[in-house]
Length: 130
Image (cartoon, rainbow, N blue to C red; front, side):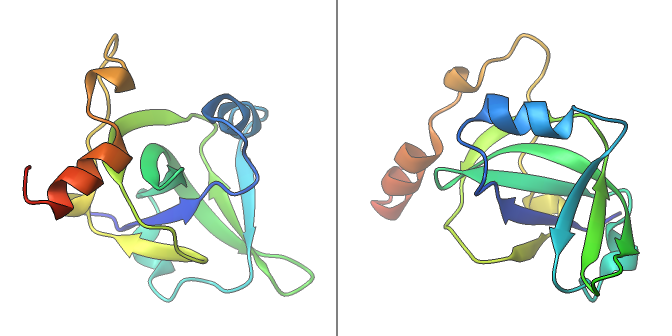
C-alpha cells in the first residue's frame, strides 16, 4: 500500500492549467527542496493537488531524482486524475496522505459538481451538520 502526499497547486490558476502542465510531456517534473523521508514508500502512490482549499486531483508518483543544484525532482505520470473534492487546509510544502484518508477517484461521466464543494463541506462539518 503506497503512501501519497498532498501539495498546493500554487502556480496553477485553474484545473485546466494544471492539466496542461501535467499532461504536456512524457512525464511531469516537480521540484522540491527536500527529499521526503518516506520517499521509497511513495513510489506508486499519488500526489494529490489542492486548489482553493480543496483536494481536486491526483497524479501517480513515478520516482525521485536528485538535481545538480541539490534539490529533488518528483517524477509524475503525465495524467491528471480527478478525485472527489475534499476540503483541505492550506499548508506549506507537502504532507503525507495515507491511502485510507485519500479521496476516491471520480468515475467516467461523474462531474465534481455532483459532489458537494470542499469549502461548503468543510463549513458544514465544523457546524456538525455532516
